[in-house]
Image 1 (cartoon, one colour):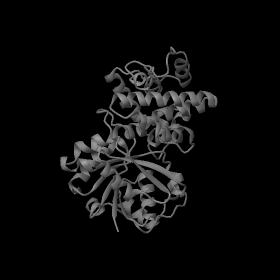
Image 2 (cartoon, one colour):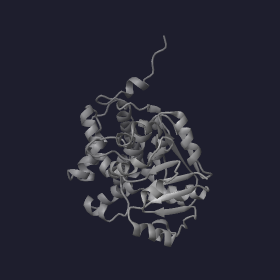
Image 3 (cartoon, rainbow, N blue to C red):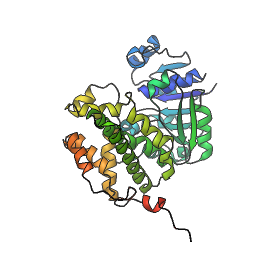
Amino acid sequence: MPRIAIIGTTTWGITLGVVLARKGLSVRLWARTEQEAVDLTNARYNPDLFSGIILPPQLSFTSVLSEALAEAKAVILAVPSQTMRQNTKLVTEHLDKSMLVVSAAKGLEIGSNKRMSQVIEEEIEPDFRSNVCVLSGPNLSREILHDLPAVTVVAAWDEAVAKKAQKLLNTPKLCVYTNTDVIGVELGGALKNIIALGAGMADGLGYGDNAKAAFVTRGLTEITALGVALGANPLTFSGLAGLGDLIATCASPLSRNRYVGVELTKGRPLEEIIASMNTVAEGVGTTIAAWNLAQELGLEMPIAEKIYQVLYVGLDPRQAAAELMAAETKHELVGRKWKLFSLFRRRRSS
């Protein structure tokens, strides 16, 4: 029976552990403290996080990293993006050439502005880098825990590696597709969180479905523009890791980033909102990294700019919306240093 190690007792980490254990795989989840591992082992469920979902017997917990990774076919890093580098450093000495390394985080590292696979590849041995995969898609943990059908995407530069991860991770209720556009799959998962913050603000302000649909669509165009500038395939953003994830995150009341956006319209300080949550809203940190990337590239990203100003400069969400609406209109695929118009415009047949 294949064994999988999961690093991180995040909601998503435990969710993946439950799903894979239900499939019959042996899953060991690493908890940072012995007390946390003991509590999860003794309780077998966490009513605060999982509404009475019973954890399968194939899922075990340990605070000993070497024990978690022993004989594992894959290690899934399901940690907040801002702790990915630290956790990868802990894991690296336990890796071998046959072990898949799967990032399940959806964010960009503040400071370096790097994707999670880039962070991982910087911290592990060069010989192991070809085994790095990324997992992303429209995956709301609570629905998956309740055994509702869902799909996701696993991407690796080598298609054979992606297919290997697909075979290991695919379950009857979680259908795993493959992709070789690592950049696009990662950026789709990370950048949609920024748009979800704005979608929450639109909902909180009561702007209606027309305005929200327009905002989300313009957000997808902006995500695609940055992705293409960084080397992604534009078609990836019309797929599960792009549009699919964007729809789920912007529409669902289960979305953490949408929740933050709604709460900001009530006048609550960002710090207070974050402190009240027991999970991480990745869009808050990713907004900084994305805005920095846009500045480095000279790329026009008006939505990311306004979300940044709301989060970190104190701009009122209503004022942000008014300024976006007042922006100069032009062809919808044209922006400063965007490559979209040249990619998509129709050419006259000769």
